[in-house]
Length: 120
Image 1 (cartoon, rainbow, N blue to C red):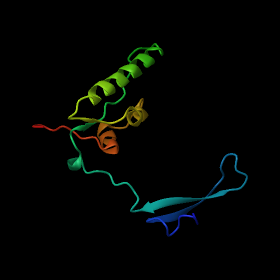
Image 2: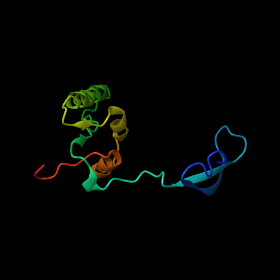
Image 3: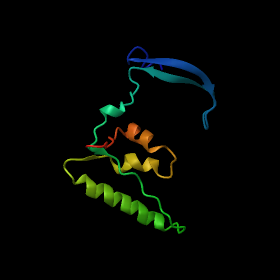
């Protein structure tokens, strides 16, 4: 912390010491707060042309079908990315939502993906 204190626009809040794996002594742990925190975009600020194609799910019991489903997701992202009027969020950004229960609205806000409304 000494290397960055008063050099970045953040506040460091001490939250205690923790034992970490493969480290002999307890380590002081801090929480970083401040203007460096990423603000969530307001839903009205989201661009409806910025989209995320979320990972498809396999309905098959065969685990080998997961490779096929992942390939289909990648192909969809690649194909839709060719549409000049759209900005498609990368595969690496959306794949972390594979097998998740995060609500779609929350995913959209986290990825700053827009939402089409009636009339758009």
